[in-house]
Length: 360
Image 1 (spheres, one colour):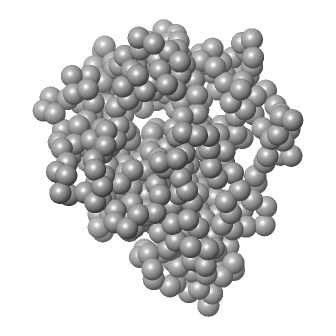
Image 2 (cartoon, one colour):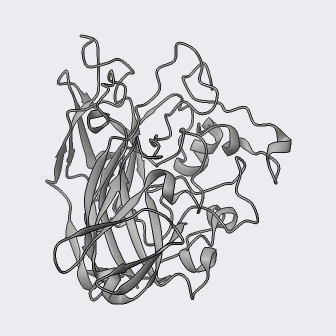
């Protein structure tokens, strides 16, 4: 695993309340585990391209042949597989994971650098379909995304220019468990992990769900996020009637927006509720994270932005699964830190913009 460039974190058993498992040490996946998900054998050291769709995909129409990946040198790379894992819950189907030979770990300044610059959804024998409002199916063929960054590039001092994972969308809704859950056996160790299961129905009144691109978010590339990690990495911002911006910095603190209360409770859609959260805490390491809030609906409606500060003021950067872990290997190039950025929060309090599909 280390020889392949993966991270390995050394963890003392006494530092954990539970026995360390493979995911406590690394996010690398063994060939056997890869076979269990894809059915493909003999696969080693493949790369990942993550695709986000604004409507959830119908997984039964999802194949590697749905995608054409163009690299910066003009060559076409083949996706040997495509799936939704680790986004296995029923309300997480807008994140598609492609595997193949998509690049290397060189910076853009190196003439030999390879990285994806374009991903196209193309027609195959079973064209990829997306599920729209009221279960309507539409073809995704023709959709295209472009890219001009590599997470292995030389990183500048300015945190706004870092090329690590980003949040690309966020939406606030009333807390709901619709769509929570997934197929066995993957759900057994990780679920339930929704806001109500972690914090209780009384506390979990609202949810800001963020969607990430460029990988799952982790403090170092290996350790999972904890429900109490909000203050370290995220900052919601409300806007009152006069246009004043009010940052919600501290979890557990009540803020008044035009006289209406709102409190950040913590993070959810990670792992199961635990007595203690330590380096052996197992979370789902995927592309959705929920910020749970309590308070009045009027105050919740005022939530306007989600900041990822990344550095300064007590804030820390995040990494994707290619990050360095606790014990980086000298000479290995790991993926970049998340940049400082802000996304608007969509208001789904009246219309949550959800859909359901039943093939029957």
